[in-house]
Length: 246
Image (cartoon, rainbow, N blue to C red; front, side, top):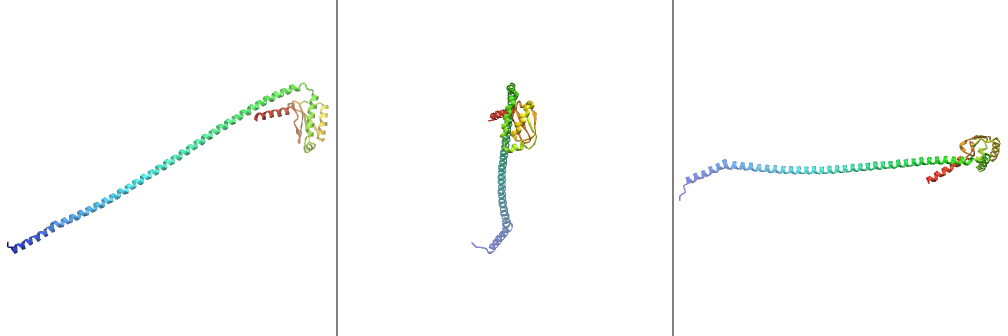
């Protein structure tokens, strides 16, 4: 087969023209499109990575928020438990204080009732003793009774400490008290015996106190001697009350 040089040249020119046309109108647009596509894909991947990072950050924020909620819930529960404990303690203290007050009030009322009963009992016992004493004293002679109480008074005066007797004998007036008025002779006898026991020249005055029931008492600024049935009955009553308390 013979090859024509002109034909070969024309075909070469056609090939060159075809290559130029393909490069001009096909490969360049195709390359540009591929480059744009690649850029878009890269941008999409970058956006996807950014979205993924944002989602991770959002998830971390949600987790932190959830942890904060859990801590806040725990703090609220702890505060509520503390408040409840304080309220229970306050109620318990109030109940204990109320119970203590009720017990104290009951004890005070019991003591008051007991004191009132003892006072009432003591008053009745005292009145009964006074009535008994009055009945026992009625048949006794006045002089014999005065003599008995005078002897007991003198014995008490002699047993006084020396400093007390000196104070009683300093000249201040001394009062001799009896349950009934004393006759003049009885007063003179009592005055002489009492001054002798005190070794004093102090003035003696005589007075009457019917509540003594019977007796002879001495009252002065530095000396006082209880010497009567009333004093004896009071001592007996106090001893009885003391025994009741014991």
